Image (tube, rainbow, N blue to C red; front, side):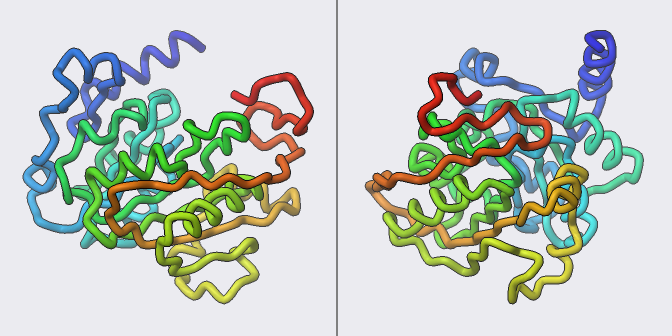
Length: 257
């Protein structure tokens, strides 16, 4: 398994559309990556740049790029062995509007200039029920996204976690962001974008087959000077999700990873 991972990392080192720079390496470069401010030059056009944060295998990044050739898509994740699958597919299919960054999402502001990003997708993140600062929709991360997002840009969250969905809606409410759509059962809702509905990753299909509902919320991020972290009591998820550590009960002493 370790050799297989090393082989994938080696592959990605040779991929022209993959940039590997974990947080530690970025710090050694002064906190700014050489691609910051140069993504439209890399893609060879001025099309909008869309990020998928926590992209995993890159299935969503690649699928969106196929559906929207007039946008540029960049998948971001620290787990390169998973990302390799999407990166390889994009390379083999010669997709000109796809790139990947292997880094910690906490370092995302070092890879883009102000207003360089037009949209963010957050797909099935770990809800981090005990670690608010690690939730990808916490105010800590919203302040990072604001540094690179255009004012009024859209952020999308797709999740199987009721905890993450509820928390995100409370964060939106506390900071008075404009909700464009929110529903706790996406595939039985009034959401009408058939293109988006047609994208179902491997793990998403597994969750649906288990009878779990998929939650979705999108909202517009207006720039602000201060953020309000919601102070709410939310019931923890109690089930084991695919490819994720067991979610503990509220009175559990075991930390959620």
